[in-house]
Image (cartoon, rainbow, N blue to C red):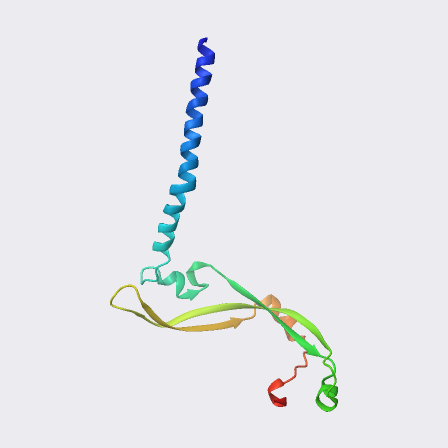
Length: 145
């Protein structure tokens, strides 16, 4: 075997071994490291309260909900004649979900957090005009029970 072939064989062997080691690291060790880091970061504590206690808050996570309503077209016939409901779907009406954890109490065991959850929705400004113009006839089902 001449020198250049020997060099290619050694180089390919080294690259193969490195590839094998990287594969093992990626498949076995990396998920274990990610899981342990995620578990440490997910603990609710005073140190990271600004990330979980006020959503979106400093976390920058914005949650949006889509709501659909049904506009009843034959409301009088349903009420007075027991007709079948004829309805059109209206929506989506988009609202941002906001969450505040209030009355936060950290227990002595450093593993338990007590809080009251306050969840509310706000309509984004760009959605307000479209939603204000929508007219929906709704049926109060409780009235008929």
